[in-house]
Image (tube, rainbow, N blue to C red; front, side):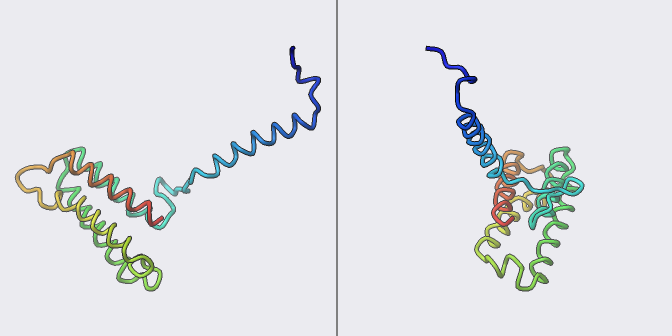
Length: 140
C-alpha cells in the first residue's frame, strides 16, 4: 500500500514538521556558542584562553623565550584579576575551581619558564595546555 503526502491531513504534516524542526532547534540551542570580539571569546575566561593559545602557538613555532615571556603576562593578569576582583573574583566565588585552574596554568607554564638549554617535551606541554583550556571552560 502506498502512502502519499497528499492524502495525509495537513494538520498531521504540520505537527510532524514542527516536531522535527523543534527537535533540531533544541539540539542547536544546547550547543553553547560564545560570542567573540576580534577572535577572543567574550566570556569570563576568554582573555586567559586567548593568551594561552598565543603562548602555545609561540611554543609550537619554537619561540620558547617568547612563550615564556607571554606566560608571565598570563600569570600576572590572572593574579591581578583575582587580587582586585573583589567579591566577583573566582577565588571568592569558587575557590576550589580557582585552585584547579591556577594549578593547571602552572603545569602548562612552568616547563616553558624552566627551559634553559633544552626545550620541554612537546607532548607534555600539549597535554598541560589542553588540561588548562578544559579547566577554563568550567569557569566560563
